[in-house]
Length: 149
Image 1 (spheres, rainbow, N blue to C red):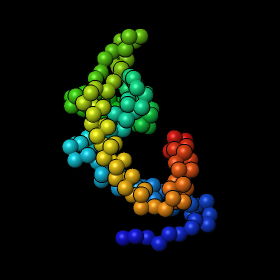
Image 2 (cartoon, one colour; image 1 turned 120 degrees about the horizontal axis):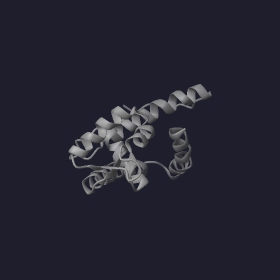
Image 3 (cartoon, rainbow, N blue to C red; image 1 turned 180 degrees about the vertical axis):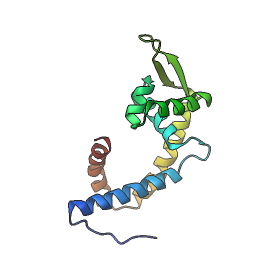
Image 4 (spheres, one colour; image 1 turned 135 degrees about the vertical axis):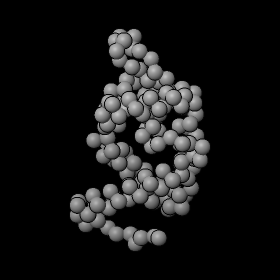
């Protein structure tokens, strides 16, 4: 059900409206996941980090990036290895350290999922006015800064 647009008159009101809107958009994008993708969002986030960095990351680096504990990330990585989405190997510098990299299956799964969600969002953006899209273009880097702070 559509909601009536409100203007946040205070920073606290803006925070509340942004939180709610971003959470709803996230849930809506999650609903648009590729139908063949059985991976949880945390596993998809790991594939995304590996893809964005273009190389290998340690379990600790992945845990830090996702703000989870290393044992939790180890479980996620173990499941991704078992599914053939990532590969693990001992670090050249420190044999105790594990390096994780994306496999072809992991990359293909991530990109198919992204294409589907991007297509859905592109259709929704076409429903907006040019002015509204311009506002979102300016807001996107600001939202990214908030998300990575």
